[in-house]
Image 1 (cartoon, rainbow, N blue to C red):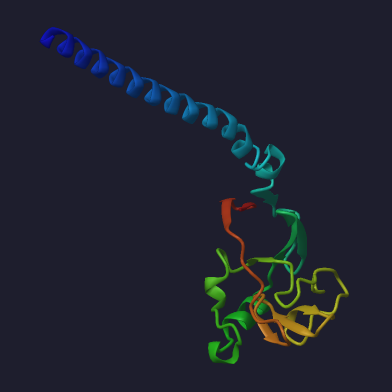
Image 2 (cartoon, rainbow, N blue to C red; image 1 turned 60 degrees about the vertical axis):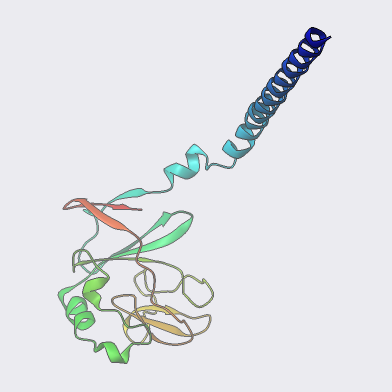
Length: 184
């Protein structure tokens, strides 16, 4: 009788070990199956190759003469590039910061003083300010003018007058050589 009791106890213990193993394997297979199902869904949310290509853009500055501007598209938005004159550089540098609604020194907004690169959307409601083309109204400060609500920007892209709360944003810019920049 003692032998039957020991045999029954051993058999019960073997069944518990087998049951634990089956639970563990079923859980592991469920996790692997869920991962195999979820990976394509998560991966489909990654940006496409076309979008990644727009993450940065290279611009040749050699055709832009002193005093001229160029508009390029980066991430679906306009970016203003201005080859500033000595007068524009001096004017931007001479502004007292306490006169500015969004206080930022000109030297903090440029990599090279002669090249200004700023986002081309007004910080009030996202309009595209005038001032890039010859003959455009440049506003009271010689930079850009947003006619929608009257925001005036200076030659450093800083807000000087009007409802815009911030300066035109400066995108990440890197000079690859003397005539080529990388935006983004």
